[in-house]
Length: 607
Image (tube, rainbow, N blue to C red; front, side, top):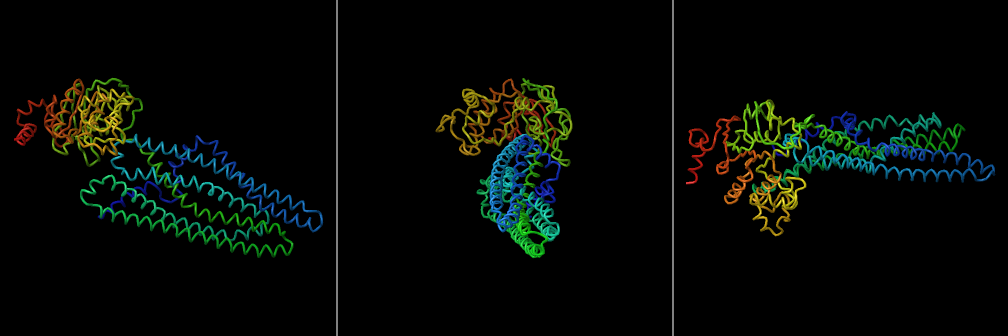
């Protein structure tokens, strides 16, 4: 399977979420719910916009009728020497209607623009907030490129429709309907002749819709793939450089980019066929109407003014159809974008907030797992059954081979996941019943990733507790031994760490992450390979700090380095998702089990 083939699975999944039949996606219940919730706070503005559109349409429809009235009455009055009052009045009314049309259009565009941007602001906030609240399981399966696509290209599609297409779309549909009604009322025989081209227009529109839906889907799939490839190549730039993948990644990106270009070109080609075809049908119809209407006018069946009005109304009938072809892609794009965003907002957290949370303002830190079973899928059971009690204030070390289930157990303790069966409790309360804010305050997990945000070192440490003072930040750094390297930086605590902490070494980033966790002052601290990036001097400094910080606090330490385990009160050895040894470090070392073998191998490696 080639790298280009691999993104097709993501694209197909993306497309399945989005739409199966173009604009019909708007009929889906979740999209309607999303639109209704976005529009509800702006009902007054939207009603005013409807009124403006009706006023705009009325003024636009009045102008051909006023021209007809001016021709029929003005010319006859002039010939009868009754003055030019009718012509002057008609001109004045036409100008007044044009001014009303311009004023309504301006007011509508301003109002709908502000309303649309307010709705987009609300939508961005909702999506971002929802993405933050979704569980870790969602983010592990949903690629970063797809998330960025939701907040960029999908939002842009909606913005394009609101800014440029919505006004034209609404007025075009309304003008087509009202024009058809008016010409039938003015003279139904000529009106029926005027509508003879309508079946051809329906066929053209149906053809355009079918073809553009398929072309549009290709466009959306390819741009999503382009964004995903771009984001992931730059996110993994170190690996790209390390393995000299630049040429290959460029080949993949070029092919995806070319697919996007081809899909976009096909889309423009369809518009290029549909628009002129509509124009051809429209001009042919106008010619037929002129011929038939001229014959009726010569025989006194209609007036010249009515014939002129017909020709003007036909312009307002066919021209909007050409505009609709231009808006259709934008409309499809926005409809599919809304469907995708509605799909994201409909995602339920796999670790939901409790409906009736139990308050736990000051946790002691006792952890109990009772029959806890967990797997990442029906066929991937990682922890068959765990029964474990960790008293408050105890420091426990988890050791074992890679894949033994140590990190999975740590994630259950931090409630990144919920067990498939059984319970994980803190101070006798099931984690699923504890309010999320209380739980995050009581349990903090430090991983080997040690992610730092753009900003200063002080900002990153203060991330551990909202409202922390500068003195508390510096005290936390001093406690874990990070103050020495911070003081040596050009701006100390105000030094910018840059993107993902790129200005700091791996060990320094780890120390900042420790300081952040210590500032949070949790009842339970989970360290998942948290000393893996530290050199020997830094590790010794952290171990010294840990002895102080972990005192009177429950701690679970996952580490391959047995030097980190030395500070533990108790060691749990895991294998195949089960706890196979449990005891004090000295007692296990003196035995003949797995931990004794691990310790002996480690000791021999130091010789």
